[in-house]
Image (tube, rainbow, N blue to C red; front, side, top):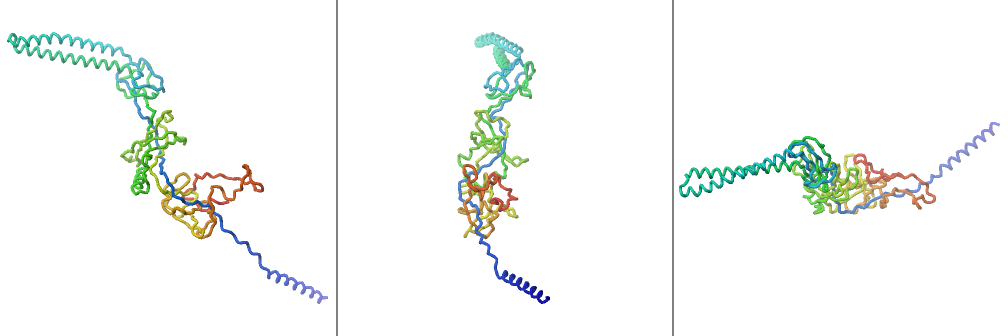
Length: 424
């Protein structure tokens, strides 16, 4: 009994050992070889790049005139509508003229009296001139008569000046507009007392068919651009360089183009900036004094500028701008770039890239320096997107939510990490 049990146990052990030996003799199936990772690239091509600077500033009227009285008195009547357009010379206020009319009449009478006194004195001097020739009167009497004529003539001139002053003061009772433009609110009403050349203006007139836009530019930026022009890296835009475009406070482009008038010759010590004055036509009076605007000034032109999408540029731990390029034998090569400024959703590259370089902008997480990749033209669409038919996913394609990321929103230079642009 025991022998049969041992025989069965031994047979079971041998069978299990045989199964294990046969299993060890077989090898695991090999994994299929992986293909080259696919990355989206853009081919760098030099192009003409206009360099512009966007500067903030405020609008101001082309002409501004504060209306003040030149004689004192009571405001008899206001003759304009607040907020309306007025013409140069148009009467705005009427000051009570009674006292000035009386002064004018008195000065006119004084002139008549002086002219009347001059006539007999002049005739007497003429008679004495004939008599002194025959010694009928003394020379002293003649001299006194001649002096009396000059005194009477002086009194006439003084009376004329007084009359002119009275006439001017009477005219000043009609307060007129010094310039044409739009007048604001009035600071006085009928019956108010005003004084000559008072500090407070009665109203303000602003000519707004043209508007000044004063913007500020840092002196460091101005020096940098002058050095770039002097070195030949940036070419002058010629006559077009003086053209200026304008963005309103809400970001709306102003339809008309302005011109740059001049740049101030003094740097503000408190801000380190220089004031640049531009002028814009304003026929529809869209621009109002004091508006906050942004002026876009064209500084110059780079004849062979290289632009690279911002999603293809990142920063290394040293803070340097870097990009991955598909080089020889379709292998990934890192490049250190020198970028100068952002133009829209692209960087302007000064050094590190040349014409024909293939910069990786999508699938960066698959690209490693020295590894081969498959380069495809970047179309701006996410990789793996299913084709659509009539706005719906193609047959057999699973619907997936699509998150739209604006191209103009580039990652921060300090936090941009290669490989985030093409992740599925």
